[in-house]
Length: 323
Image 1: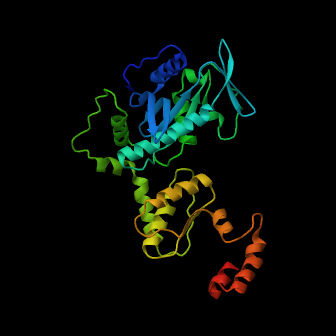
Image 2: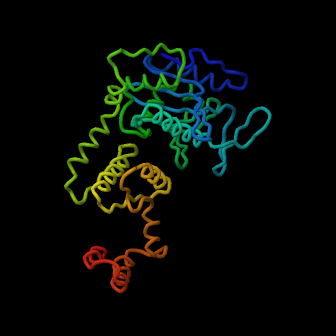
Image 3: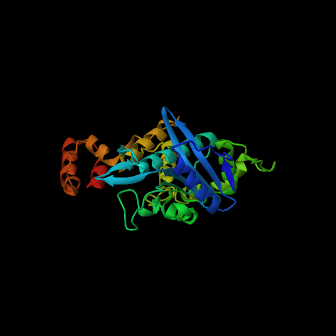
């Protein structure tokens, strides 16, 4: 198995990271890549992934390691060692934000969308966590406790496959491109016939299939795509909005999540040609129409059509469609 770096230095106070590193190194398959202390800078924010697993044909796992005795009380995480018990930032949130930063950095470096499965995890090598433990946003399968951390490879794979975002396994040729960006003396020479375009093609089959879906549904007035996290629904929506905008259509790009709304606005901001007339949360759009908070379906079925007719601000066919 390849390591980044080949033989990392674990200083005083990093015994937990070393223990989990050794456990992963001895239990992961030979074709995996294991990286220690991956530093990512995203804008003014700095992130660190304690341990990063790159598993060909499976995916990626970012693991935050916390030594000592870890506990949670009313949502607050604590770390206890021989001298004190102190508050700490949620290691789950740390791992999650670091993984997002890594993916954004890789997409920028490689010029390719990261569609591979990836998961954020937390390793607590000196803490026992009950099997039935859970909390909002963190199922038990994302935690490696004292027992799990002794032979974690199978649990890491299960977490990637069952809890990870992304729809495609990590293609080996794409893994090599990631390794070259992460750095280290890894002897990762690629065959001369392998080009970056070929690497992207091997990794990005999903995008090709999405393009086929867009073409196949271009004449349908109404279509719905469903799928799990990372399956490409947002990509389809953005590409469809771009296509319709270029055709001169009056387009609205809606969602129900503030974070996703900001993401969509950032994507649309880079378009040089026509853009949607509105991009963001559906609720914000409705508020812009003057609809008070808390109003339900009756408002749209009865009151709004009546007000529009009185104001005569839209054609009759639009009023009827709203009603």
